[in-house]
Length: 571
Image (cartoon, rainbow, N blue to C red; front, side, top):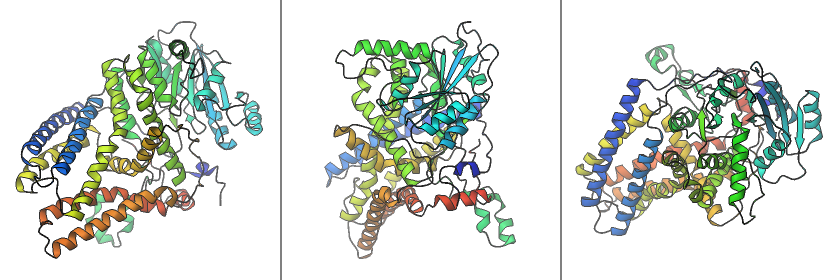
């Protein structure tokens, strides 16, 4: 068995994806169906409010309508968020930059990651193509203060920084290095971030706009299992010939829903039209002047002494998005470079996946509750709406939980939130759902929207836990996502998913039994609608069953043998 910490070295190579822009025809189609779906959604909700409430269950009916209405408003915000891609903006390195701005610091942050992992990232950083007339200094920022990391760093001729205390999480680690360096621009890389040689060549030019504070590049995970081809399970050659159109279809891929193409190639790319793509940490490059200007102004604004004086990156578990908000509030702008300039590792254990999801949810919700009002006041309104879309994606768990559990209540009690599941109900609902599905499919460039929805449903227990942590006033703090194959058993993190699946199954059995024995409250149409909704969400939650059986070592061996290759997620 290979070493737990160097598994990534044995992965087969994956093709770097190229992200094409949305075509004019696809853009027109997406925007047309988006408008149609919002119109039909308004028509459906108007009918729901005026003619569909169950008079025998007014509270349940109103609560269900309120949840639907809130989710509908969220659709407006999301459609604004991804409405249109900006024109292509890629500039040559150093174009129109001041002659004095010709230096770059590359920071590789680490805490407890393996030395071999950090060393590979360091080698790639040292191999960057440096534009003529520029200087680059690569540094390893070790918050673990480890002798082996220091020796390795110095052996490669790079700079080593460490701290005695870990105040401020990753942001404090970056601050420590910023105080001891002086380059005009700063590249942020995590311990597993393997920068491509072209990184500087393809990002520095954006800073020819003197208002640009940072440039973000996509996160590309090169180790995602692609799954087995469905044709591998077809027994006969005749059947394979008949099913040849399915030759490219795979099953069992991306077990942790790590593919981030929708977020980066759709959401981040389209936010760039308003200079609103936020920093995602690794794979970003920053203007030092902007970081320190905002740090100085922010420290002057805080007179209560609650936080340390100067924070170029805000002290928070989600320092990237919080720092972005502070910079946008001070009228700086950002740019998004749409092509991959680095590769990274995705979670390979249930523990790593759960830690990452809880960190994202808890950090974002903490910002929304404690920092959002002050920051949003000074952010331009278009950029403000983009941030609201981000935080809404977490708060939407509240109405969605109600929609998720409503069929359970209906099947157990026979009480429906509508007067009847009549033909009129379907006439109003189905056109909205169909047009919405077409709009999202085209607007998301044909990416796996069902996988994305399944990932959102799978993340709900962690979002709920994040909400409880924030509302309880507990300090939000998480360890870095583990970069190993080992982790605690899956059931410790997946028991909420199992419990909900069991509840779904009991509700379906009870509802079907009640219908068969002749319950007047359990009509066939009510049964079909509610069982279908539970099955739809249950299918997403059933991924937890696969994760319970997930064996990283076996999956790795399959990839090495070519049975389950790495997934490049190309467009």
